[in-house]
Amino acid sequence: MPPPASPLNRNAPRFDPILIPPSTFAGFPIVMWSSYSDQVVVRSQNEDPFANAINGTGGSVVIHRSRGEHGDPSNFDAPAVIAFFSSFHS
Image 1 (cartoon, helix red, strand yellow):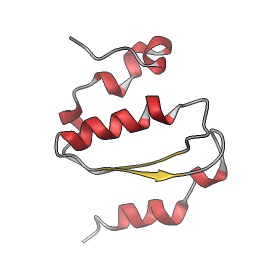
Image 2 (spheres, rainbow, N blue to C red):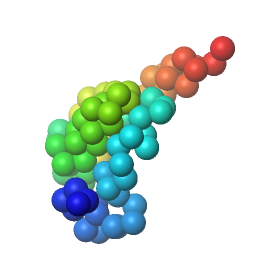
Image 3 (tube, rainbow, N blue to C red):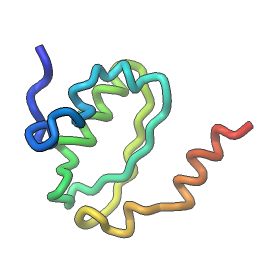
Image 4 (cartoon, rainbow, N blue to C red):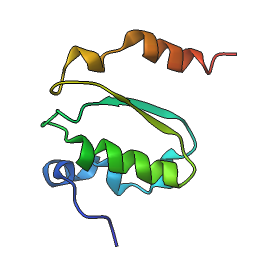
């Protein structure tokens, strides 16, 4: 049985990654930024269950806490993004 439909699934059913088996994402690290103040993409209904499902299958998802609403500048941390990708450069 598929997981319950998230708000994204109701609006864009073919593009909701929470409906994809979490093990699909377990083979590579994921980093994201999210705010509990965001009412556009509600963290407790999106990023948190997504990360928990993937981490539960042995994956690696790290959520950086941002602030404010969707699009807040704290979501755009260029040095952290560069550091994330640089960590894979040998």
